[in-house]
Amino acid sequence: MRISDLVARESPPGTSSPPAFDDRNNPRRSSSPALSDNNQDEDEELPSIASGTRKRQLKDYTNFSKQASRNVRLKVGSDGEKAVVRFSKLSATAQRITIYASLQALTSQMDTVSASNLVYDIPSQLVSRIDCYAFTLVISPTCSSYIAKRGLLCIILAHLEKNPQWGYTTAVKAEKHKHDTIVKRIQKALTTRRNSVKTFIKTSLGYAGRGTTMLKTNNTWDVVELCNTVIASGDNVMSSRVTPTLPMLAWFAFLRQILTEAISDPQSLAGKDFWAGVDNTLCQIRDTRDGDPVRISKVFTTILDRDITAYGEIDRTALSSEEFSAFDDSLDN
Image 1: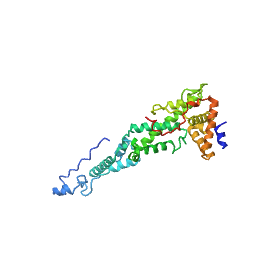
Image 2: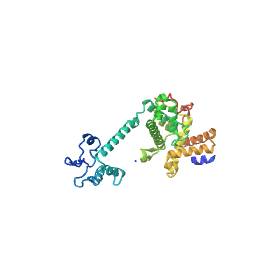
Image 3: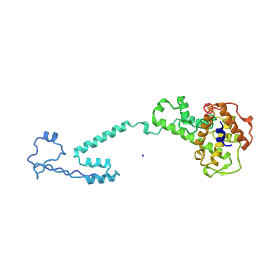
């Protein structure tokens, strides 16, 4: 009988400026140094001797500007190229002012650069807590969902926020780059643990090897051996090893049944995405039993009984009668 049946039951080189016009013989040149220094822009075009009154035409650097833009990989016709062309048509003084304004803008931007562009090293104590809780939540028989947006990630963040002494303070949470770094660390830890658990479950079904190259053998594990193997994999993040409980055995029997069905039906939801299939089945169980703990417990008891029948009897005397808590802080390093 499949779980579904049970559920149904209830992203230029520089150029020199044009040579200055030599107007020392120009009779119209001002004889006042003050007027010459203060009121005459040194780069303003002076009257041409040939025309007498017309200003000398500026040299057209449009083509050179476009070539220079291409040299620095500005796209043809882009705003950047157009800005370079406009800049080439300015007088030298106007160009210098434009450059100075740009430098001021860059300086202002540099002044506002904060630690957000620096690498944030998560405190070691906080890393230890993250790794520990990622492990205990993934093996917890009270886990409500594995990959839902407000699932395990939010549960861990909420617990860390209640204990700011570990490093996830209000100030850290308020700094986006630090918060995002912590979130990514939690997500990575959860993904690692989910992958590990799935591999152990598949091995317990008699598959040997890794990933998609796992081959079927006859070396299956009973649910206690499966549970103990998974628990032992958390020794590097736990100060003491957890003792399996009956609800934990039922939980791993449930996960093993989902994986068995996923392997037999690759086109099913669990076959395409194992953990999405787990979440979906959990939701169905809760909904069809109206969230009643007693009725839900009966479903898992039935699943465990089937698992024992399929993979071997278990020694119930080695089980802990204490309720397992994912946030038992005496268990972390």
